[in-house]
Image 1: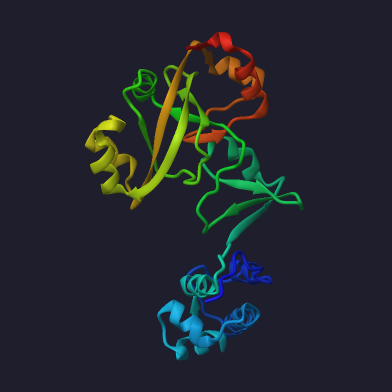
Image 2: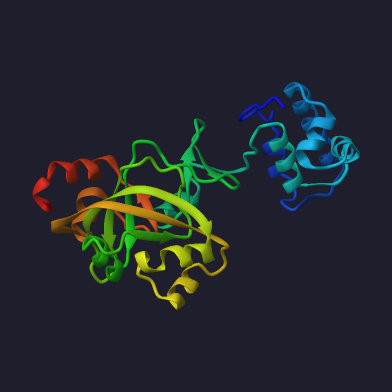
Length: 274
């Protein structure tokens, strides 16, 4: 089967967003989506039989979809995947929306589009921003073990999987320490079922079972970050100084390090203990 990546969905995403997130019940709306899907299939050079085979469905199901029958968002995603594409579903906010002021303390991935909008991906796996280091917020009980070299795996509910090897993570030790205390290199990230994470990494992550269950409550899968090349700061940078010099606010989970913060840390080698 001929494969295409990231086919232009010709306005399909915007139409889906305006409809019900679970089911497209209005006949007119479903008909428009079915028409767009059919148009994409034809552009892709695929027959209904080929799409049906890729979706493990009968041809009659594909016909109903394209003729405007009731269609679910999950079905649209499967159909688009069968074309060799990916379905992108985003929430768009104006750049001056109230959410903008709240982003500093929320763990959410977003980008700024060319028309001064904030764009949040609702379906795709998070992508790691290239050439960016990160600040990880970690409780002191765990940050101490990381800096001592004992804790080599950090667990997260959400994190980009495709992290380039060797990305620097600045360790922000949360209350009561409230300071950036050192750095580690992120050697890799894996996404696994929560129970598999417990079985494989409970000792390396230094976490007790009840705390593990509480942290991952409500999710089926989690992320394990592998650390290496630990460096402790001889002079931790306290939150008060970080706020004054860089406008820094500690994240709940992680954030991308601003350029001026990264440059300051790189230009002040005296604070790093080798």
